[in-house]
Image (cartoon, rainbow, N blue to C red):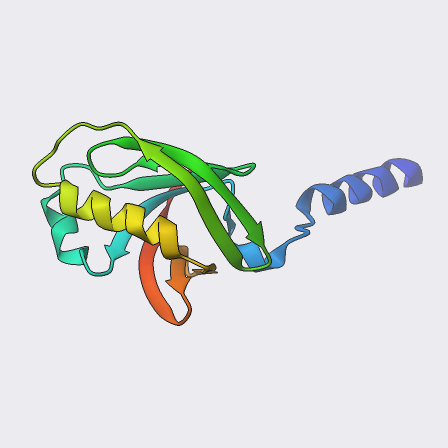
Length: 139
């Protein structure tokens, strides 16, 4: 009985231990959460006109999502709280109401240099400037 308890306690510790606490808050992790765009500088006002909010999902060095009109994918790398996106490509459909948002979002991917997860939000920054904020949308 004692061995079973020890085994269960070890399993709980191993499965619950988060080796990278800087990328986790409130149960959301950078790489296992679907993120929905909630703020985008300077195009936040344009988000209200979209029928579907842009999304982002990061997994094992690959990023993919919906930009407001087109789907996109590419690569990313992280080190501590630094993030770098590269090779972002998308489909090329034209959507009159989504083009400003999508263009701004893709520019964020080109210049973002670090991130922060705070209160169920993922924030992307360039130096001290907040570029975009995403809300956890589920898994």
